[in-house]
Length: 55
Image (spheres, rainbow, N blue to C red):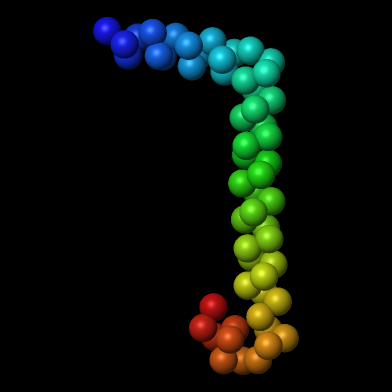
């Protein structure tokens, strides 16, 4: 019986403005980490061809 209550709490949190802002913040952090990861991978071109081919 805990599942319907959990779903109600999560859906209420998502419908609130704070919940939506939290979703935006979390996905923004994920996007920034994704871009930094690819930036570091692409910067390996300056180390040498072996590094970039390994990437």
